[in-house]
Every structure is written in structure tokens, then in C-alpha cells.
Amino acid sequence: MLSRKELFKDTLKKAAHAWKRTVELHLTEEEANLLRLYIDQPGYVDLHWVMFVPAIKGQGTEEQQKKWLTMAYKFQIIGTYAQTELGHGSNVQGLETTATFDPSTDEFIMHSPTLTSSKWWPGGLGKTSTHAVVYARLITEGKDYGIHGFIMQLRSLDDHSPLPGITIGDIGGKFGSGAYNSMDNGVMRLDHVRIPRDQMLMRLAQVTREGKYVHSDVPKQLLYGTMVYVRQTIVADASRALSRAVCIAVRYGAIRKQFGSKAGGPETQVLNYKTQQSRLFPFLASAYAFRFVGQWLKWLYTDVTQKLESKDFSTLPEAHACTAGLKSVTTSATADAIEECQKLCGGHGYLNSSGLPELFAVNLPACTYEGDNVVLLLQVARFLMKTVSQVASGKQPVGTTAYMGNIQHLMQCKSVVNTVEDWLNPAAIKEVFEARALRMAVNCAQNISKAPSQEEGFEAAVAHVQLIIVTKFIEKLQEDILGHGVKEQLQKLCGIYALHLIHKHLGDFLSTGCVTARQGSLANERLGKLYAQVRPNAVALVDAFDYTDHYLGSALGRYDGDVYSALYKEAWKDPLNETVVPDGYQEHLRPLLKQQLKLSRL
Ligand SMILES: CCCCCCCCCC/C=C\CCCCCC(=O)SCCNC(=O)CCNC(=O)[C@H](O)C(C)(C)COP(=O)(O)OP(=O)(O)OC[C@H]1O[C@@H](n2cnc3c(N)ncnc32)[C@H](O)[C@@H]1OP(=O)(O)O
Ligand SMILES: Cc1cc2nc3c(=O)[nH]c(=O)nc-3n(C[C@H](O)[C@H](O)[C@H](O)COP(=O)(O)OP(=O)(O)OC[C@H]3O[C@@H](n4cnc5c(N)ncnc54)[C@H](O)[C@@H]3O)c2cc1C
Picture 1 (cartoon, helix red, strand yellow):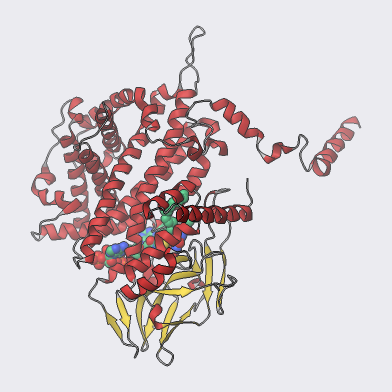
Picture 2 (cartoon, protein in one colour):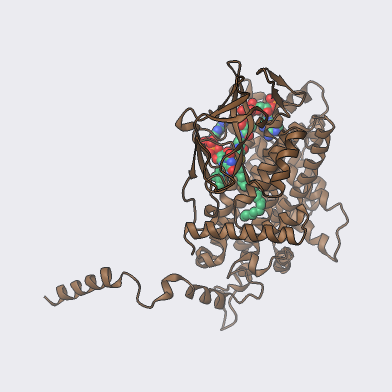
């Protein structure tokens, strides 16, 4: 109910309080991240910690890190990540902002040469950030060396006013009433702003005092390293958002009753309807699947980072493909699922008090930020095409593409599934997912030489990413899992996750010959049985997420199930209910009613 200005100020207040507590309680970095997470309101601090600091860590020299991170860690400066422009977001190489080296003063001149080169979108830029890592085309000795990162001070540390030559503001209201409107996404134009040479982030390349451009021995793709890091964190965010929506829809489904009353008996809980289960339980399974794959991705990222530190860059392409692909598939599935959860809760799901509209609005842009989901899957397709050609030339693939080394078998195998129960076998499931992914990638690679098809590459990428998620779920179940019966429940969810994908993408599985129509129908039968088996534990499986009512923010998802009183109470809090007779009655309603009354008497 807050206005945009009030909402923004509220975000500043919460962020300042969180920082105060972080210092007072000597929180570790991980604890401080959790605190920000549970504040649950997008704000400038996200960009500061999630992008500004990592960009300097990844692209700055040791000296630069020492200087800037010391201030950033103490919040003496607030930073953002200013990459996207009005004219270009996805195409990073198409950015237009220039950084021209002037050897006479040992400075870079930062400039926005066109309207479309205005920085546009960076979070916290609009009203808050004092500094930014700004991405611009480096020009020295008359030559354009492409996009590089530069640290710029944007606002005075005394009175917060923009520095000379910098025009800066907020880009305006966004989707939804609250959601991302707490964030001051900004616009910035630069008019020949001078910064010292040593504010170019120089780990990847340097410009000497004389203006010579010198490459380092690290791959230029590390320029994109911050995005790899954030994409990895977004997978965990998606899993959390999805589990919140599912928690609301499952709990409400157990409370809501419609039809089915015979001879005055109780009506049916909507969660017992098969159609409700087949729409909702795949989301429950996905929430767990995304959590496990998110944990694995965090491990992969840490592993790659350690390798990079010792100058081993071999796993960078895989890390890029995995983070890009998983960010894309999990955020798209999550946005779709939250929207569907709204429908699963019927009319009440459309109320703000259900918590679902806000959850949807705040998570929808994850499909776009940090890389448009389609553009990212096309990156995965590019990686797969390269891997297929390496396999063809006898190279053994590793990591998440290791299955491609089994090409002889996977290109011609037939699924062993013969009964409904056979679909319980993780090896049988994994085999059909591997065969589908490989055959789609190989078909795409073969067709590329004839007529390049983006769609084919896109579909092959989706198949590969889904294989990763299924595989990581299966691997998780091979670990020791504490708690009586917990593993059995997770096995059922793993089955649901995999089989609902077979159901949804049956066309792929059939057309690549991985399963027959009969096997497809056995998978559906198995899926129906799994839904029935999960039903008794559905509420426990969402309680296990351990969300407080406060964090869930939903009248429908309350732990105590007292939905109707909560909805009723929430309604009365609406500002429209502050007066019995609404504002506007005297000016607009009364004259209208009086007029009609007069007319009817004529
Ligand atoms: C609810 C509140 C809770 C609060 C809690 C806190 C949590 C907060 C979580 C949220 C976090 C932050 C908030 C959101 C912030 C959003 C910020 C942004 O959006 S920043 C801007 C992001 N922008 C993008 O992602 C742009 C997307 N575009 C690209 O990445 C690239 O341009 C491209 C990859 C699409 C194309 O690159 P390009 O160089 O033009 O083209 P090529 O395809 O030829 O690639 C060359 C080569 O590089 C390899 N590559 C590409 N990317 C990477 C990479 N990232 N890492 C490694 N390698 C990469 C590519 O594969 C090619 O390699 P080859 O060997 O030549 O094939
Ligand atoms: C809430 C939010 C916060 C953001 N925060 C930041 C930030 O802090 N810092 C920052 O720098 N940026 C930020 N961004 C910008 C964001 O990173 C970009 O919007 C994103 O990278 C997508 O780029 P775009 O907007 O140029 O989309 P476009 O690339 O213009 O996409 C438009 C359409 O074209 C399609 N398309 C584009 N290229 C291709 C292709 N090659 N093949 C097929 N289809 C294609 C896309 O799929 C999409 O459907 C933010 C954006 C949002 C929404």
C-alpha cells in the first residue's frame, strides 16, 4: 500500500538497519547475506554485494581490490553494476559508452555518445549508488579494444549530488504495485567525465602510461565472470521462490473444499482432485529438484573459482553453460509455476493477500535480468554444438557432457521399460534423458550445415539442462539422507520431476526414438500413481521448507490453516475501507445518482 517514494524510503531504512545489526552482531558474510535475503525486498544492497563487489574481485588487480573493496566492505561507498544501456542489453559487445584514454593527463574520458548509450537498468543507480563498475568501449591510440570495466565515482560523498558531467535518475515504475519498485533502477548519461587511468579494472588487460594496450594471460571471457557468479545465485533464488508459491498452494489446497458432498457429508479438499495434483505436484517436485541442482551448481562454481585462481581455465566454458542454462530453465519454470499457483488457488489467489501476485512480480524479471533466458539457452546450444564436434573428432567429453562420450550406445539404444514399475528405475530414467539430449544435440549439429535453426539449438539446450537437473536429483538420492522415510518421499518427487518432463516433452522423446508411445503411456500411468502416493505427505513436504508465516506473507498459506479469518481481516486493512463512504462520493457518485433519480421521475 506504500507509494513508490515511501516504498523506496522504507527500503533504505531496512537496509540501513540490517547493516547496523550486521556490524553490531559481527555477522559473517554468509549470515549477512541471509539477513538481506529474509528482508525480502529488492534494494541497492543486492547490487552492491552481489555484483559490484564480485566485479572488482574478479576483474580488479590485487592493488585495486585492496583499495576499493576495503571501502566497499565498510559501506563507505555504495556500488552498482552499470552494464546495460538503453539500446543494448543482451549484446554486450554492442554497448556504446566510450572510455577514451588521454595520455596527456593519464585519464580516461567516459562518455555517452548517443541517446541509446545511456546506461539504463542498473539497480541502485537511480538514487543510491555513489560508485559503479561501468562497462565501456576502451579506445586508446585511436583503436577500439571493445568492452572493459571501469570504476567510477558517481555522486559526492558529502552531499550525494551527482558529480559534474553525470546526469542520473530513476527509470520509472515497474510491473506490479510493490515488487521491484523498491529498487531504484537507474539511467545515467556521461558527458566527457574524466577518471584516473588506474580506475580501469586491469586484471584482464592494462593500458600503460603511454597508452599501450596490453593483454593479460587470463581469457577475455572473465569479463563476463560476474554474470556467471550471479546466475549461479539466481538458481537458488528460483528454487526458494518456487517453494514459497508451492507451499501456499498446497496448504490452501488442503483447506479449500469444493463439491463432492454426498448426503450432507464433507466436501472434497481441492488438493484431492487429480487435476489439481497433476498441475501442482510437478511444481512441488521442481522446488526440490531446483534446490538440489542449485547446491550442486554452487559447488561447481566454487570448484571453477579455485581452478581459475591457479590459472586453470579449462572448466570455464562448462561453468558458463551450466550457469546460463540452469538460470534460464529454473527461472522460466518458476515464473510459470507461480502464475499457475495463483490459478490453483482460484479467485483468492488473485488477491494481494495471497502473497502470490507479489511473488510473481518480483520473480518474473529473473527471466530477463542477468541474461535473457532465450539468449542464455542459445549460449548453451553453442557449447553443445562445440562438444558434439569435439566428440566427433575423438575427444572424450567430461563433466556434465560426459554422457556424450557414450555416443555409440545412446544414439541407438531402446528404453528397457516394459512395465509401469520399470519407470521407478533411476537408471532407466537417466538413460532416456541422456539419449534424448544427445540425439537432439547431434541432430541439431547435423542440420546446422544445411539450414541453421535457432529453435532446434534452443530445444537441444533445454533437453541438456533438464538432464542435468534429473541427474543431480538422482545423485542426491545416492547420498545418506537423514530422517525416517525422507529418502522414500524424495524418491517419489524425483520420479515425478522426471516423468512429468517425459509427459510434457513426449514429442521429443518419441521423435528421437528414445521411448515408444506405449512407454510414454506407462510413464503417465506411473506418474498418476506417484501423485496419489505423494498426496498424504504433500503438506509435510511443504512444511519442510520451514518458512515462517511472516516470510510467506500469505493469508492462504498460513501454517495454522485459518485461511478465511485471515482473508477477512486482511480485506479490512485496505485503505478503501478506511471510510464507509468512499472519497469521490460527493463529486462523482452523488451527482450521478441524483441525476438518474431526477430523470426516472420525469
Ligand atoms: C527478493 C529479494 C531478495 C534479496 C536477496 C539477494 C539475492 C539477490 C539475487 C538477485 C541478484 C541481483 C539482482 C539482479 C541484478 C541483475 C543485474 C543484470 O542484469 S546485469 C546485466 C546482465 N547482462 C547480461 O547478462 C547480458 C547477457 N549477454 C551476455 O552475457 C553476452 O553478451 C552473450 C554471452 C550473450 C554474448 O557474448 P558475446 O561475447 O557477444 O558472444 P559470443 O557468443 O561470441 O561469446 C564469446 C565467447 O565467450 C563465451 N562466453 C560468453 N559468456 C560467457 C561467460 N559468462 N563466461 C564464460 N564464457 C562466456 C562464449 O561461450 C564464447 O565462447 P566460444 O569459446 O567462442 O564459443
Ligand atoms: C529488474 C531488472 C534489473 C536489472 N538490473 C540490471 C543491473 O543491475 N545492471 C545492468 O547492467 N542491467 C540490468 N538489467 C538489464 C538486464 O540485464 C537486461 O534487460 C537483459 O540482459 C536483457 O537484455 P535486453 O533488455 O537488451 O533484452 P533484448 O536482448 O532486447 O531482448 C528482447 C527480445 O529479443 C530476444 N533476443 C535478443 N537477442 C536474441 C538472439 N540473439 N536470438 C534470439 N532472440 C534474441 C530476447 O529473447 C527477447 O525476447 C536489469 C533488468 C531488469 C528487468
